[in-house]
Length: 403
Length: 148
Image (cartoon, rainbow over all chains, first blue to last red):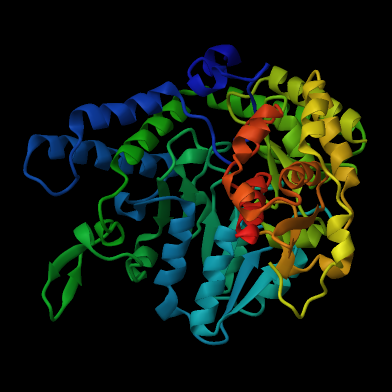
């Protein structure tokens, strides 16, 4: 597949910043959106704009059909058993908060919750809040010297019979891939509920929740060529059904009197208020976009690009890469000599190169690396070899200025 | 910015700064490209004193910066003086540009400053954004509020 043809579908990629064409290497923060996603959303607002599930009129019927069709589409995309296991959220963060809140009654004092050291704050802080409410204990799962999960330490921690194991599928900073299938099986053997943040995995690999066999899996639309403001909380029906709703009101209710409220059944029970309708529709179109890609070819091309990115960075010299392995996905984390990551980011930006610089909402990981932050270059399906060459050239100029 | 219990810079440290925004503008006018502008920024940053660790305290830290930045302020006879530092070089240089504009100015002058226009004039459009990308927005706000 011709990457240039693919790029033509992404209007944002065609722009210039000052004298430089945009070199977008921040897909891990948010991906650019193809025109078909933007059109689907505009189309909803232009022609079908109505609230879902409620009204008796045709616009609402059309909107509801489009909205609910995406649930089926997501179910097929991640191989969920039932459509009711797909809950639309505003994003991964809300989804994890919904689980952490929803499990409050099921967690008691002294219970252990294991959390991936490389986890994004969104997969740490909600558990901390749950621990505060219940008296449970949070324990980080350490990384080995290759910055992968230390499986020995993990098995040791599992002996404490944790009630919840929260992992990331792919690290948002390093791009390292966790062996989630194996880790879930190990966690299940001791009876833990398993939660996987798949935000960084979903755009780069096939996700099959049956194979992984996790209890919960989460991702966001905007990191998979879809819009912001929409995400998916997948949960096994029995697990989802036990969650106390974080948000109440609207369609999540069957009956309300001032004495009592009866909640609706899944999936509505966990979708309070007006959902992000156009965003759900945009997400559906993003799935169509991904499904239409020649999967084997694009995944191989992304792997080649990431490897080229790692090799090019190494050959530049004065670069420290963090946890860069051959089987990583999407992102490379690095620092230039002893330079502050922010200085590097500002100077790359001067040349139209967009990368993320900072702690990447993974402060515990930064602490374990003993750094304040780092830069991260991340790729998507539209990333070209020229993007990487331009990035490396820009980084050369940064090096000349700073070193 | 800081409580009385924490160590404070001595008066001379504030007054040691001698900036002239006119001279800076002239230097930036001669900068042919972004590389030269950023060289100037870093040179300017180097002229700012480095704060001792004792002064790099949380109370003086400006929130909203991805890099760490510390700001101290003193008012002497109605004039405002600042002392600031950052662990990032370019940010420190950009801070120096802010201090050049505000050093020894009255509260009214500082309140009326159009910092966006100043940065645009220096060819640094887009440096001020209300995010932590470089924290200048937060620093500019902290400088203005300290003078109030």
